[in-house]
View 1 (cartoon, protein in one colour):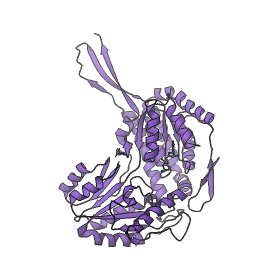
View 2: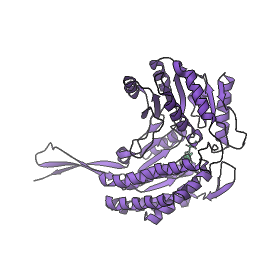
View 3: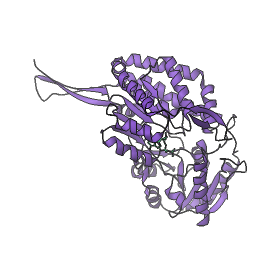
View 4: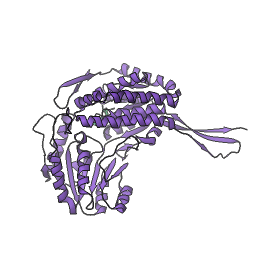
Length: 457
Ligand code: ADP
């Protein structure tokens, strides 16, 4: 068994099995064996079952939220927000299951018809991270199941309790054994078991770029389709003409969500010289008001980081910035509460030489850079191997369109700090991965196109 630890106080809140190789192999076999019957169900049948899952979980939102607070550390309001977001995927794909349309193509042969059919890719596997223990599971499983695929999941060992609860409710809703399976244990061994199995036709992974590249290599041997949602280094650009109040509010909520442990968290905040000082003032005042605490309360609080490695990394990044001359406007050290709590921190006067510029911070640290021109901002924003999301704030429409074209990212968000919802294609380019989750784009990743020529009179 693997202990699941509450990052707020170090207590053991549950356990998850350290599954043996034969147990993992048996679960993969169940996933594969269940595929033909699930794929043969009508879209409406699959949709009804997904909808039941949605209804059952929705009725017990609080149960899920409390588990998430305990194993992840985020506060209740955030957990409930994540549940809404995650339930949105089940609802969306319960509906979308019925709309996986094919095509007809004008025939090149007068005695033939040309059809394009869409079929589920087959049994699939997914590996998910700990930062969104609920939504990461529903986003992948609901899409796969709607398309007619079966799916085996390995959730993060830090947050498996939410995942097991989702499985329990799925069974109650009528999602059979094999159609949705789950395993926990040694990530390397499970990753290898998923990727080397020829019967698995697709792997969806959300996590670090390092592990994503490893899995992509492993999937090469059996040529599996993949969806990879990996690390980010999001620029957040505020121009002189932006609405400052809105930009500060958007930044604070985007940055402090899950204590900054989010792949779309604003990582490099570029502020134009004309408003830089005013922006820093307003941001400091806003962040100073936010409390740091354990999350089992209704008020929004910044919770602990997930584990020792996470807090060591954030500490090292801030120390590096300070040693290179960054100005610390707020925080800059571990929180007096001790443990895994880190103070919301604002670092100013940074440049590209600082480690925070080139590293996904994954903590409550605002890293600010001053810029002069639009060209400079775009060049700096794109100066990263990542390309998940880019945020920009401006009231100049022409500039907004230029930015939407020139920023190298899978998602460009203008005048908002809010990105995700079930209906949009979420995903990145460059080292942030490939493939999209959400909307009708998401389900395309789980179907394959079959061209059919029907000749004859
Ligand atoms: P993070 O740093 O956010 O934890 P990881 O990429 O390490 O990101 O973890 C994301 C998911 O990938 C987790 O479920 C983790 O257990 C899993 N994982 C880590 N290493 C491997 C591996 N070698 N093979 C397969 N999965 C892995």
